[in-house]
Structures are given as C-alpha cells and as structure tokens.
Image: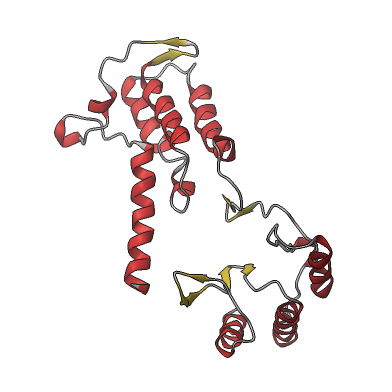
Length: 231
C-alpha cells in the first residue's frame, strides 16, 4: 500500500491528479488508507477518472492485489448532471452511491447533521442502561458501570465528529439517572446534584464526564494536531 500511496503522491505533485485542499493549496487530501480500506479524492472529470484507473491498474499488476468493484462506490457532488456522473462511473466501472455509509465505524457525513443522524449513538447508551436497570446492584457498581461503559460508548464517534448538543445532553441525562434507578421505570431521588457528581474525585465528586465537554476536548486535540503539522 505504501507504493500505491507514493504513486498517488507523484501524480498529485505532477498535477495530473487534482485533489481537494484544506485551508490552502499546499494541504491537499488525495487518499486515506487504513488496512485494506481506501478512500480516494479527485476532481470529477473523465481525465481524472482515467488517471485513477491507470494508477490502480498499475498497482494491481505489480502487487497481485485485485480491487473488489462490487464493494467499491463512487460519490459525487449533487451539483453534477446525472448523465455526466453516469459517464464518469462507466470509466471506472464502479457503481454510484448517494450514501457512503460508515468508515471505520463512523458515519461519513455529506449533508445536514440532525439529531436523527446520530440517534444510534444515543440508543446504544440508552439500551445498555435499560438492560441493566432491573439488576439489583449497589450504587458503587452502578457508578462504575456508568463511567466505564455508558460514558465510554460514544467516545469513539466523538473523537472525530461533532455530535449535536441535544444528543450529548440526552446521553448525559441517561448517565445522570442511571445510578439512582432501582428498577426500570422506578426512579429514586437523585441524592447528589449532577454538577457535584461531575467534579473530580479530589474535589468530592465521582469523576463523571459531560459528553459535550468531552466532544469539544477531542476536537480541540485534532485541531492542535493540525496546527502543529501544518501551522
């Protein structure tokens, strides 16, 4: 895969492959690799499709690998004409898709983000809490479950994605209620304010995490990384 990456970089440097830029023209993204998954970014022209095809064919011949076109997809801007998009698809013989689904378990968003977009993240947390509710467990065990499982469930998605604040608040609501539940539908009174529960242990709290603050912290970490690399 390193040879394929180098071939793409050479094509980008020579100008035969035009990739989208982030910030300025020096920060172009032409491809993303992870194991055997590959995402390519290129200008939507017949010439670029042929460049992509030639590079992939050369790589396959040299390495012995084969591209599974049944598992491959092409995604284009909705501003392009349908006939033109079909023509580009025919060059690579890869089907067109209007939804790229997930990459490494995270949604690839190409439209407006709403609460429904990430409702599965909230549902995953709520389902776990609901399944545990009938269990007779101590408060300490419930707090541990909340911190190690409920708080941790959305973190993978949060590391690269801005979740709607409403989703974060609803996840906090599930975590806030869970330690005081005795059975499903029968809630105990919260004996300690949530603000105090979220304080560090050294300050008398339980170290619970607020989801929105965690989300912002993850994204600031990415921003700091970009600043150090390209700033």
